[in-house]
Length: 238
Image 1: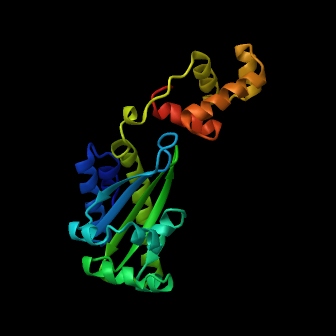
Image 2: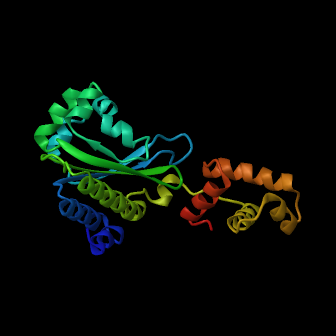
Image 3: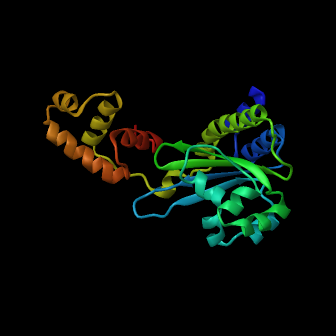
């Protein structure tokens, strides 16, 4: 797949252009169907994970497969939701997983064989991308490996657009109001300075810096300094 196709996806100006780019890329790879899902695992304290789909999934298939229990049983979904390695699937995968009935239900809509990948993103987000078709995948290991590599590269480019276009507006999840001292600590932390150095520069103790950082973890709903900086940047606080 050529570089222009990847750029078409990563630089998409809106959701419609993003979808068109993904579909065009799937056709370049030899697949008629493509499905992307942005999973926002913890968008705000106490909230449930959000799933934002994009792709050309047939409407009839959505109507026939809307049962949440089926989604939980699906071996492809289960794999990409928790693993980083790409997955190649066909009927055998479903049969071996005790979900052969799901493959039988999906096959008439074009979901007979395919490849799925997952990309971890900052601040509790994950982007899943899968391509599907009716004909068997290449038996030549070299061709199949190239196909998988192209899809992984596509997913990496697609995550940029997904982060811009599919994540809910910042105001929808709420932006915490940070104190000036907290912002000073975050800025210095962003520069790679330790708690001891930050305290020395601000004229406070290392324990006080750690106390403020603990409060920041709670306000930003993160669990590390790196995540705190990334979340603050994403929310426009830095």
